[in-house]
Image 1: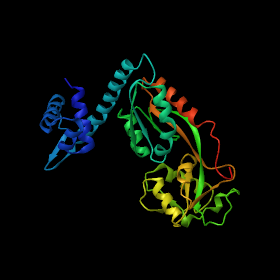
Image 2: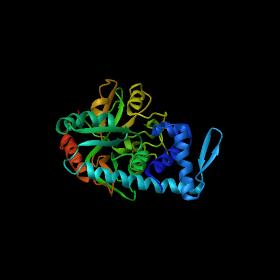
Image 3: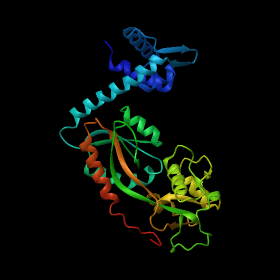
Image 4: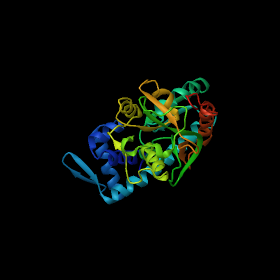
Length: 307
């Protein structure tokens, strides 16, 4: 009989492609994990793993079984969640993922309120890029993720939270008046600094520039930065300009070498929301979490200059 343990070990092996690292991730010995994989192969009558010195590769059948196994594991986690969380919302363990352009700025605003109202919640956080978050929500590694909407994924539901407008961050030496709103055409594409590939904020900035007809074929400068703080240091040092979400502006404007310019209507921006598996039994938890986050960010009064 196939066991959840075997499927979990196979999922770890598919992720790490190494028996040692997979065993470490599952907190078991390498021989124990290897034995369970062999038992699974025997039960199925299929070779799931191609073993090579120092590494392993899943066979075509192995990859298919691993993918189907992740669906089974996700449903098993949903079953446990249903049993554990019927009595009250936001109690017990909750795994929350967030994108890097959101986590450092949103968490300080809603975490204290979350802790005060739901002291029995055991929150685990994961910060990574959108694609990875969606994959982990789908396979059950994450319960819910907070990121930019919309997402086009099968078996994923979403809950909109708040709108986050974009500002144009420029060096303080820039001659433009902070009190006057700027046009998209004011963006100098050759000086535009963006996060590295894979960050949704980069894609959103480029989409706005393309829609506005600004540098349609350009891609902006990229310094391999994975955080807005790094990009803002480049702007502060006079190396260029960037688009920055409103939620990050109050934190990043602490550097007196940078100033923010607001766009004329319609202002560019992004919609922030929660995403979760359509089959998750914890939708009540996500609704409660969403209402708490909205309480922290709506209405969002603009305290910045020229707002």
